[in-house]
Length: 127
Image (cartoon, rainbow, N blue to C red; front, side, top):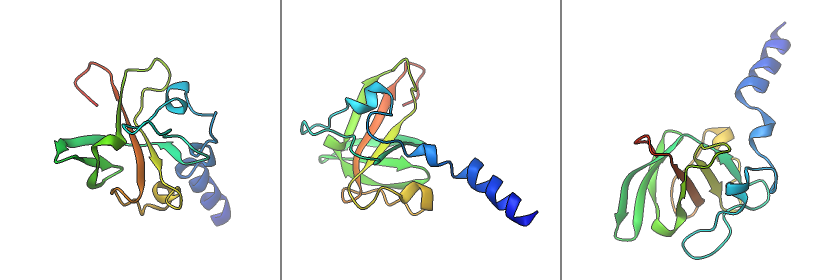
């Protein structure tokens, strides 16, 4: 019984499908490029996230909140898109070596870990 409860917890709270391979994201995520013209989406490095900008454009940085953690990321890492029809959630794309941070609860929001923060602007006052 205890093993069954643990398995149910892992499937509900920790679904493996959250981390999709490149090409399995919504099209707008696959096509996203940062302010330096580099692709945001790589191999299994993006995931939907509870994310928002708290302060924008502070000496080239933005102060962001991603899944409860806050920190400064370069302004060029913030990608604003018009509200997509498919899956209008924010996404975060991690740099190599930081891909599993949301699933482990150890996310650190800084320029060393965050490749792109994809923020849809959907006209309802939220972003």
